[in-house]
Image (cartoon, rainbow, N blue to C red):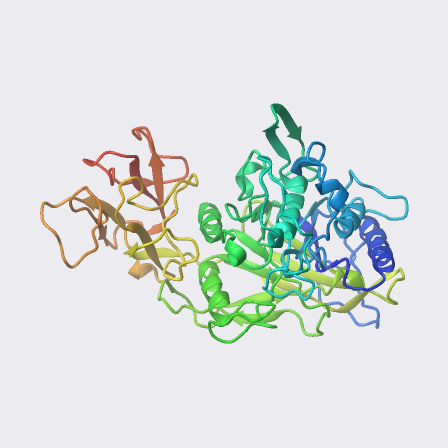
Length: 543
């Protein structure tokens, strides 16, 4: 069996309580409990003596694969350290330790900054950090700028230019994420700086500059960790977050999900809840997202095998977990069971010494697996031992029903896709290059959106590129608004042929002479006759 065990924390939120030192000590105590886990077995009962509803009772827990933190590391964006920031020669972003609150976080979780009075977790795997609304904005956690509550100067970059003062804390916190997970490989004042990260994430698994940058306007810093039987995605505040000019990362997420296929088990970690404090309609709440943003994001997730939605933000653990949320399908992208649900889990706040332990188990050769979740809470706040609470939860992980492509829609837009609700799914480019068909030609931004179904009889069996001399007004031209005449996608249905199960794009600056690994069929060059990149549709057929 392939087994992945991981810990979910949320809301350490240093600075929330007036007595920061006492808050750090409670988190230090919690780290002691985390370090103790690997030597324990899964319990049979909770603190009340009730039987836990899990299938792994008595089995050794073993060393977890990692600790995922669902945002709000701090209450004030790390605060600031004027003397360090003002030293332009010594303190560049790669070695900036941050304000006093961020230094407390480092003392708790960063192995390069241990402190005698603080215990760091050990034997728990890597620490995977996420940011929440309090890490980005003012102490009230609202979406407003910091206003008067800022250090009076901007964040200094590698080019010695400064951000707006109100953006200082955002740069500081994204810089921390970069220090932890990517490191820096930059030339500063003619000197090369090569700083390794504490908990490295491969460059192809995180949406950031591989050389190390904290420019959160250019990258989302979303990342995915392959734990063997499951992929865990860290999306920070929420999936599709483009607040304060941040790139949302939805395009990156769509590409990563598509590359792994519809059956791959996935866990989503983000700060905001899918239930609590979700504002009605399209109006943003002061501290949260809204229903439209949530539902657009859920449509992105709809075709995939999402086994858990994990979040923080709400400090208390409510007694009935998980919660089931129905997946919307407002734009008809996916023929699914209208009763399809996703399950949300919340561990409660780490500063109140709460967390959750997840175990995902699948057979090595494929087939049904199991998923177990149990919750911890301090018996008395500030004290150990930690006790098991609630009743636990388990679910059989059945093999998902096959998904097929039933048709395609060509979407023309005036802007590059990032958070557009018109493209919950699209043909992504397999290596991360642009999926805009008109890339390099001007004109409209053109995308191909596959329509999906679980009904095999509705599936298409092949596709081709067609270049007529005259316009077909019943269809959308792939070269809309650009040079290249008319070009369209034809789809074919033949019940005697294997159906298409996945459709992506392949873009190359060289002629493609062989089918890429993992695919069964390839189209002719979409850009044939107009220059530019070689661009092909590639697809999988049912086994």
